[in-house]
Length: 385
Ligand SMILES: [Zn+2]
Image (tube, rainbow, N blue to C red; front, side, top):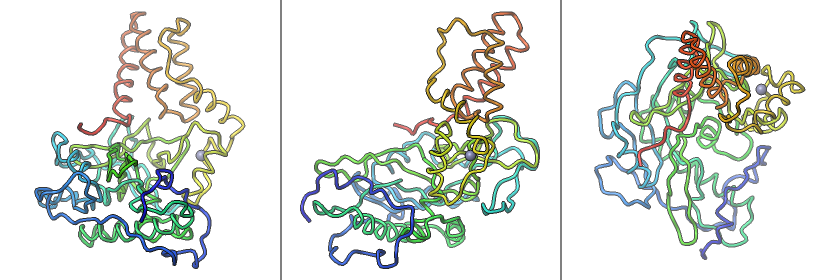
């Protein structure tokens, strides 16, 4: 294969629609090869930064504990970063009590439902992922001018092969859990393993160059596919958030507000401040149309969300704010189901600070306490450098 212009290594925009059988598999004119992936039985074996590796983590360092291990597809650099994480590999932190059950949801498979009132910030679950892999990378060098449609076919084919090899590293029981997850990519040419990954992955927060080539720098984000965390359904008014706990190589779910017993536990799969129609387009890849409170009344919710989308960070120099104003904003964001946006947190700090200045310490402590908890339910704690 000749050298590749970087424009040919961009992510092909996979169709979400139907792909005919004749358009699946490798194109007849394709004779290239994907970069090899090497299985490691332990990270103590030597490996290079630029190698693509298949390994089970952390089970190669500890005996497989009750939390299981993840099938990992990753570059050598990413493996070094994970191994250097302070505290790795700990056991995943566990909730202090059982707070949810799995139930069938009409048209949405299984969902998680609160069995007790869950408090703001409470840990709902924490689990090792079944799969850890790059979100995306073109592991194939394509000839110049090679059609995007064929690039997509080659790439889907190679990803399926990679995932079969990577998932063979975990026990049959863990693999069965992976295969039981929802696949909303049944008709777009994705194989079953790749389709499940595309349907269920969460950002891991780790980005790392996988296989640098001349003229191409690929800083690939890595994703995790969990078991229970993959069963959480979407809402544009989410009441929980997925967080990554690096020292235990796990992903967890924490409440963004009080969740009442019987309520479905939800997270957001898209930008919740985007207009309703934009959100529905983004969610179409998961094969459903959202019917949450915000989507049921876009005339009202789009207006509020557009405002907070443009508003940006809270301006602390704005002298017009007072505790009553902050409480009004908190109440408005509560009503709109927007507890996940950063401004919600900021207005708790603002209310607490103003109440403290006014000498109203009980109220100050209430809002500053909630601000402290909300800070812990934020993404982006970052991997060890
Ligand atoms: Zn919605």
